[in-house]
Length: 122
Image (cartoon, rainbow, N blue to C red; front, side):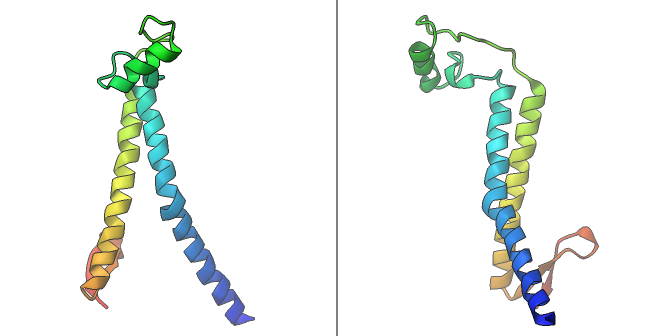
């Protein structure tokens, strides 16, 4: 029975890490994109002031035909701040994953003793 508990504990750890990096980071990235759209004034996919051609085409196709946004909104600073924070979390997660891979290839192990990531010999 003791071995079953150890096996379930290991499976749960793998599940949590898999959800965190397998689905968690893309979800945080998606929330960042959504927050960035809100930060640009919402509905930026049909914003003709957008610096890309697709925004103008969508405004003509789905707007009132004048090429202007049907429902213009003011930009929100909070949306941009939250978006950049979400993108920073994603970049940090990717860099942490790469660091673990490189460290194991060099015969080192990445530990967080004292809260600071350090390399130690395996």
